[in-house]
Image (cartoon, rainbow, N blue to C red; front, side, top):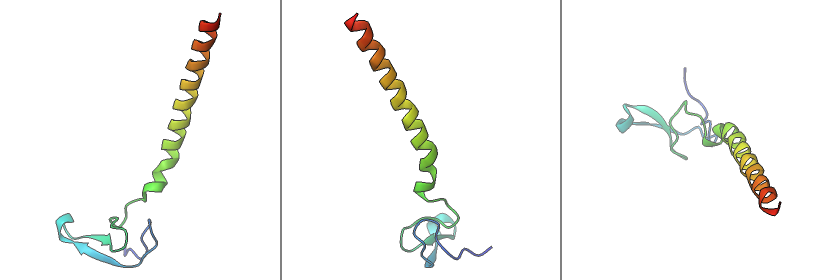
Length: 69
């Protein structure tokens, strides 16, 4: 399967990187061919961050209610 477009930046310029055993690397952004872009994994990270903030907010509200009582 030939890689034609970088999944990160859309470039069609690749080179073989000897330090990575000849794996193709994008000349524009440096991402290895076939790798996912950094932004594509942020969806699950974003959900985790939202849940974390909701837990912190909930704990802060409970502490505030306990202190003011």
